[in-house]
Image 1 (cartoon, protein in one colour):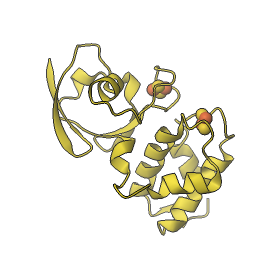
Image 2 (spheres, helix red, strand yellow):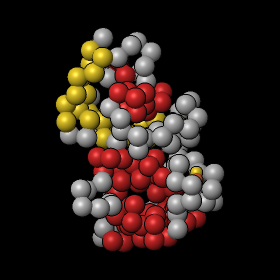
Image 3 (cartoon, rainbow, N blue to C red):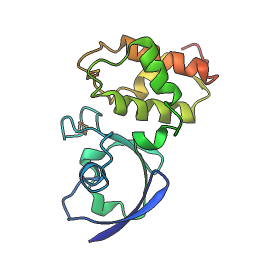
Length: 159
Ligand code: FES
Ligand code: FES
């Protein structure tokens, strides 16, 4: 069947099978390779994208069920001239090692800060809890998010 998706601001018409996932469509049909496949079961967050305003694991979304939806991938969060504040924060804090989890964290973190001007550390941790990292121990990722938050003028609230 044919579906229409608005991907990173551009409408696309895509032929999909009934079992194809959004992740497969993004990587194999639209060649947006920033979205990674880790577990393929909705557990690791490597494949996180924003679907109709919410971060979701694209590996468990059947593309045929989201005709007419809007999808934003990590590519859509990066300005032409460089990196976004979260990407810069992660680099500054050393929150990137193998980098496989990084696009998912960038998507989840960007979505969180888009919706929150004031936040608690617990809220931030909860927003990132669907993203797993096997390398960094999370501390530097959190530090990178906090560097980005400061640069974006976000305020940390008491718990
Ligand atoms: S690859 Fe989708 S959650 Fe792990
Ligand atoms: S940096 Fe390697 S999985 Fe997170």
